[in-house]
Length: 337
Image (cartoon, rainbow, N blue to C red; front, side, top):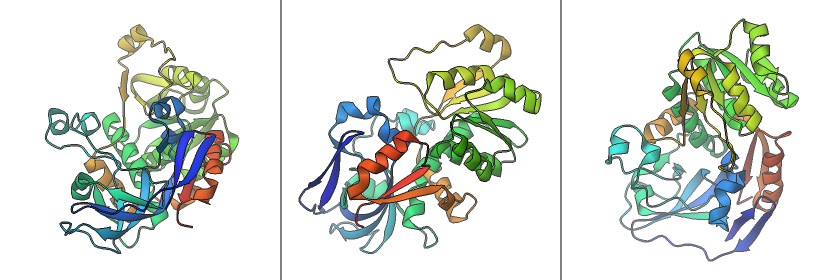
């Protein structure tokens, strides 16, 4: 079968490898759709493990199961979580699933024709897709689950003003979810095309991030934002987030600069204004279940975010579309087309 080995964003090599065969407790799936995530292009995050097969936003069909696998059968349509927590450790018991210290196996990358699903992921990381969810739509389950968790941690409520800085795919999902909660949504980005799309997705106000966001907020709404969702990693975006949150507000770090970047936090100002900074990394099983239901019930529509569908042979083009960001929102790779 063909797999795409990622060395860096410009060096992705299609190679032939032997077809995998499932062991007694494993499962073989045929990848139908796999999204390119914004984290896939973050080289400081991925390069230490390169070369590797990336891709964790997967919709697939079961083609073979081991003899001890009874819950699934060939022909089942599934979403597989990229990794699963133990559900028993201190962190899991307290809802911090991404911090689980017992995660030992991850799903092999989805930029491949087939994937061998490890036993633990067969047991607690596999989700049957309802008939109403297409393979392409299933690539949104994991990123939407991350958005669900971030907004839950932020305690977003009806009537609050929510500023989304960075209108990539995750930012658009944040806009869509905040819209369902009855929030006033302000979207900021440096890309005019993305701002136009953000309007279509439900943003009430759009701001060009090359301007002073906090000043524009004051002009448009008379006050700063209750919640700031930082979905961009540029240093300037972080600085804008600090300046754009209202007294008693919350800043959510959904994206962050590279580790070698130093960010100055105005601690005294935040202390006096009772501003909360929190981070949200990945998601947990309850978030995946909620995201799946949101898509199944069409509470959150996702087809309008898909801008490109490409075969595995064009994966370099796909990565460059996401890196560039001007013409793409969601890029999906179809490994078997």
